[in-house]
Length: 272
Length: 223
Image 1: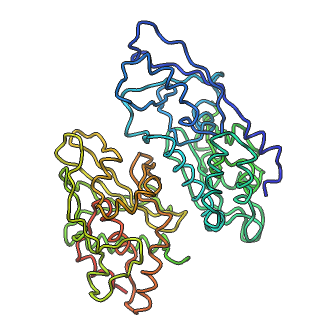
Image 2 (image 1 turned 60 degrees about the vertical axis):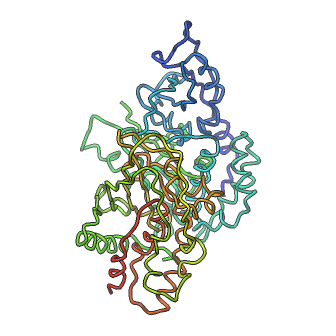
Image 3 (image 1 turned 180 degrees about the vertical axis):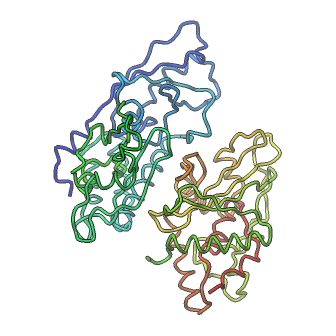
């Protein structure tokens, strides 16, 4: 159960350098603000790390209504409820670093982005994912058997970037259930132009054999292997910024490559 | 199936029953198929429910179907939704200048929780979306106080699992617990097959202004 601590630690410590620029048409001051640079954790969420950015740029805008900040990459509004690493892998994996984003305070794209009224909303969303993941893995028995303070510790561990504090609780969520594996795999598969896909998927076959990443991709996104259909387009399968081999057992991936919300977020990226 | 849950097949069958009745009484429910053959890839939709601003749904008008049928059975649903606490003092809501809200309701099946889930949006006449605060203002008072502590977990904005657009969702994690005594009760009383979907929707719908006319109770006994 998540024995490979080195892998866990390395993923936890993963950072992305980001350059934030205020949208040119929202600058109302005489001088144009310098960009703001931050090194952000891949495992975190933008509302948890971008306070500084908001405070910095607000004074250059005409915003006095407390409008909500939102971020955009090359015309794509970024969903705050996706972990930062997922957004990068999905939209910008081939871009040069630092990752250059545009900050907006106006014209919030309501039909695409959820509102984020505050950190409570991020916590609620995060815990909701953790509960759903445990429902898939253990019928919810582990998460429901924990006390409220344990749930809080998970959240605080993530928010304050405390690996040990987080994993003291999370290791229980990574324990094998009956049959020495999870009941179903908590995963979501993303492609840039489609809603994300989530299906029931068992980590072992009826005969008790380990199912592999290739099996999952073949079942949920067969176009990756179906090169006859569109030979000009080939796909990369990216998880946590790397392309794991197709022979990797999904049970191992779930235990080691999940994000703190306990989901395996798999990005299908065109490799053109 | 675990207690209080239902399968995708049963969800589809009961949705068909609901749709047939809806057509009969012109209640406006439709079936939307986006991912054929995928569990959870199709769902029920009801559009264009107009609700004037300031109208608070009066709880005493929203009696769950089981209560409507059984005069002597006042606690079928268990603790969570006590329909007898009617909020007769409608407090004027502090809402933006607008005349009405247009609601749209979606009933999806959650493959993670094996229960139905209710999603909805409310738009203002200019097409913009109502905020969570505005939506909370139509939640009956008796629910508001009870749900206040769980406000962030019970009714939240989420991505529609199939369409991907932002909608409000009634969180599914307590549904099985809520439905289990009801399913048990139905079995114990040997009332034939109960329509889970209708029972569930008649219980949770009123929280967000969706009422099922009482005539839906008739389809609960199709065997």
